[in-house]
Image 1 (cartoon, rainbow, N blue to C red):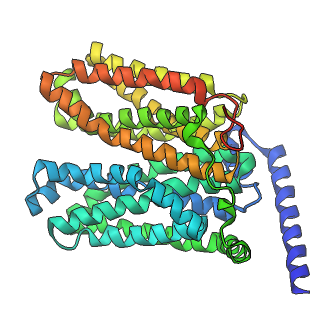
Image 2 (cartoon, rainbow, N blue to C red; image 1 turned 180 degrees about the horizontal axis):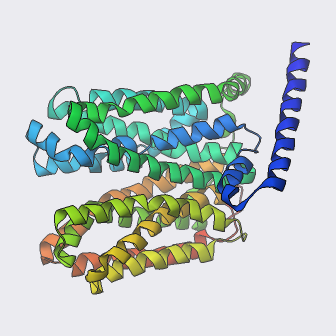
Amino acid sequence: MQERASAASGRTARGTGDAAIRRSRRATLPAGALAFWFVRASRAPSNGLLLFAVLLVALNLRGAIAAVAPVLPEISADLSLSAGAAGLLTSLPVLCFAAASPGSAWLARRTGLENAVLLGFLALAAATVLRTLDGVPVLLAGTLAVGVAMAVGNVVVPVVIKRDFPLRAGRVTGLYTAALAGGAALAAALTAPIAAAWGWQVGLSIWSVFVLVAVVVWWRATRDLRATAARRRADSGVGREVRRPGARVWSSRTAWAVTLFLGCQSFAYFSVTAWLPTLLVDQAGLDIATASVGMSLFQLLGIPGTLLIPLLAGWRPQQVWLGVSVACCWCTAVTGLLVLPSAWFAWTLLAGVAQGAGISFAFTVLVLRAHDTAAAHDLSSMAQLVGYTLGAAGPAVVGALYQSTDGWTAPLGFLVAATTLLAAFAFVAGRNTTVGQGADG
């Protein structure tokens, strides 16, 4: 009786929700377009609470890394860090994104998607605090643990989107990538004032509170999903997601295109993130304060860039033109910094939009090109293993070229080549085909 009553209650709630959405369609004004998009995205089989949980998780998948840069001078002075050790605080997590991707996929297969995120975020909360407690070795070990914990969310959350929001996967992925950028911007903006009041240790460790909030919401939102997955594992001995291990992604042309698009995008993004202030000082003659403003604009404009892509991606079944447009924006911005640095403001704005649009396109096609949840597992792991390895190499390669040539012509020329390659990979990654079950040649 209780089950029938619960089912009837669920149908009534869904009916009420659908009626409310129909009424909102008739009453929607242009000013409410974004809210209407959010409501439509949440009409997938999973409820709005799961969407909220996904966004909270995304908000915390970059914050602990972005929080380091504003207080790096204080950390270096307090712990007598060398320049190399200071650089590891930002490069180690990106390397972990790559190295821990296969292990993250394995954890998800063993424990289920929902439990993998819970375990990863509990580890993230602990590592965020522990890295501030005692000296350089603990700081570096904690930073390594932060990167590994974040890698779990990087790999698993796109799979959750593919599974639980199949009809709105592109839009939900856009919200997810916007939350990634928003979380990084929030941490970068607030860490310095917090550290000025209470010290850099508090400035870094306070972000664990937001991680724990995400843990609580995720636990509540996925409670029924975890119970269902546990029953499946008990019945079959494995999770539902691993009944067909492997989607042959490593031999798929489309999978490689998606992977290398993410790789070139990450290479450009992390290179510009690391070197833009120095570049603006050298090339445009700015002081460091003004160059820092340019850096903030570059990061903040990633947010509208991430939201723009999924809105446009739904217009056509293929997204080739969209990926090529992102590549053109990236290439134009980098070329502009090389040949006309006096217009740095325009190039920085364009690069900001391009980097947000680029990461959004990469994750959108990752979800859309996967044939099913199992293929999404494998494609997500492959793309982030290779893609973030290239991304982590970006700052070092650009820095080495800058040091060896004593100028920006060679580094920026290399970035022009990398962003031009984005267009080539978009031609394949944007086609309306899928990876898995022999769907892709």
